[in-house]
Image 1 (tube, rainbow, N blue to C red):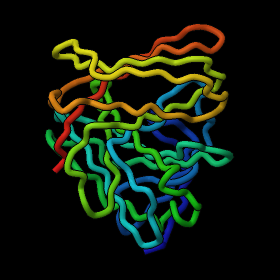
Image 2: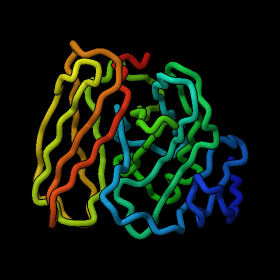
Image 3: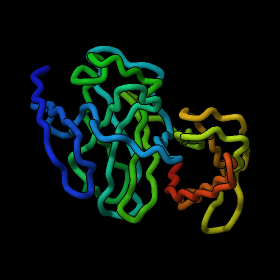
Length: 231
């Protein structure tokens, strides 16, 4: 444990070039390192969490749990929510997952997160299914959360946002199950929206629609699969 190999590589077209990857030789299940590629300056989704840890310490082993409603490829990435001068990135090597609840593990904090002083409150996870929707991730150590009814969804904005409104819609019924707004989000900053799904709504596909205004008006939509029972 603790033996690291730094490998500069060029990735396939599905991955950006210039990512210096650090392989944990014992676990051999992910790439982890600093991304040399400039990250897009556009408004973008950073992370989608059902739950995450308040903190972790040296020696801890993290796990990521997520629900796959349709067997296929899903790409799991970890990033810092507030990147700063160093652009951290983790990629899970396995991209093929069966239907149902899945767990990526082990993710040792000693390999990169603790030495590089990346804290739990700045660690984001984003899981995207090949069918172009998102699978919220639960980051935990030992105990799996009993129920998930709310999510934190993190975004980066390159420009000052004067106002933003959002609606969360259950696709099967067309019901708007949550809505809200925010304003005065600084340029080059990260912010989050907290989404809540009432108990009467079951597992299924939902759509988050965002309308925001910087120098002009924009609309973005994100589909995701909600499953309330991760155990």
